[in-house]
Length: 172
Image (cartoon, rainbow, N blue to C red; front, side, top):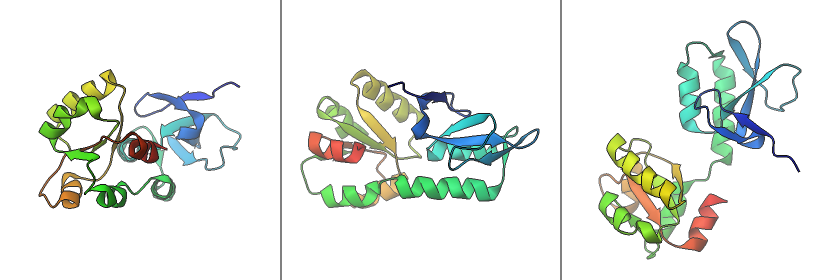
């Protein structure tokens, strides 16, 4: 069966159609959210990620109503896993490591990464290079304070999941 691949308007990443929000043009620079993906018009696509939606809301050439943006955000929140509560439940297991140094030491045994949305650029580049090299899945979730709260620390910029089963549960 053919995979329907589309490109995100914002980050230019190619993804499956089901992993993207569909927009249709309704004027020169105005776009509408096509929730059912059925409107008769040229489709444009945006990733189902907070980063792309944030960039879309500030985009100069692509204008969308705030209602449509809120609808997309609420759909994203419904489908998004609550990683904070899941990680809080797992915090006492040996399957987690946190903080840049510990995560980089354990990177060979890591199966999934949770990065803070406000992680520093330098650390992000370092981690993502390793993650891509070792084919480790990752997600941006929460900020440093929220991730730190799980372990009773002030700030934590990254959490590594070392258990294959737990990682699979977080990915799926």
